[in-house]
Structure formats: structure tokens, C-alpha cells
Length: 153
Image 1 (cartoon, one colour):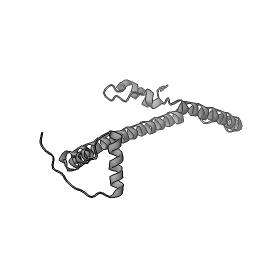
Image 2 (cartoon, helix red, strand yellow; image 1 turned 45 degrees about the vertical axis):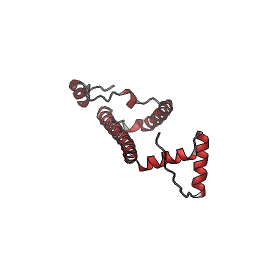
Image 3 (spheres, one colour; image 1 turned 45 degrees about the horizontal axis):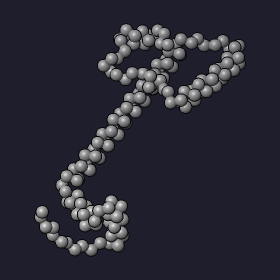
Image 4 (spheres, one colour; image 1 turned 90 degrees about the horizontal axis):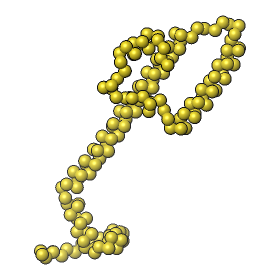
């Protein structure tokens, strides 16, 4: 066994208390804890490990942001497609039926908002139900049928 070399260091009182508490909690001598801390501080791999951990977290955040951007694009495209389909397929109401139509529209809108609230509070979303697997994709025939004013639902 190699004999260790003694080193005298001066520590700030707070640093010493932190070292003392940590060593006590681990059941290790203070000199062993200090030696491990110095070795870790001097290790060239320590900064590489931290950099790798940060890079891994940043990659995960970047993937999450890309997924959110993709979801937003799908949501906006879906809404735009629905609005276009609705505007081209629903005829304008005659002027005399306007008050009744407004009342019916307000009632239907209230039911829609209630249903949306229930759906969001349950955690179930249409985006979760839609497959994002780009390799599988929607067959070209189905897409062209919906885009050409065919039934989408």
C-alpha cells in the first residue's frame, strides 16, 4: 500500500462545516471526502461529463421544441382545412332566419366549448390519436379526396 502524503489546507468555516456534515452523513473520514472532491475537481473528465450531460439535456429540449412546432403546424393546418371545408359547404342563411339561426348557433357553440373543456380535462387529444409516423403517411388518394371538397369526417 502506498503511503499517502499529508496536506494542510485552510478552509472557510462554512466550507469546513459542510465537509464535516457530509462526511458524517456518509460515515467517511473528512480526509477521504476531501481527497475525492479534489480528485474530481482535477479530473479532466469531469468537465467532459458535465458538458455531455448539458448537451444531452439540450438535445432533449430541442427534440421537444421540434415536436411542439410540428404539433402546432398540424393543428393550424387542420383548423385551416376545416374552415375552408366549412365555408365552401355551408350555404348562407336567408335574412329572415337570422335571429333563430343566431340562437341555435350560440347554443351549439356553448355545447362545443363544454365538450372541448371535457376533452382537455381528460387529457385525451386528437393529436395523441393521430399517427405522426411520416413513413406510414396518409394514402395520396384519401388526401386528394378530402382536399377536393370530399367528406372529411
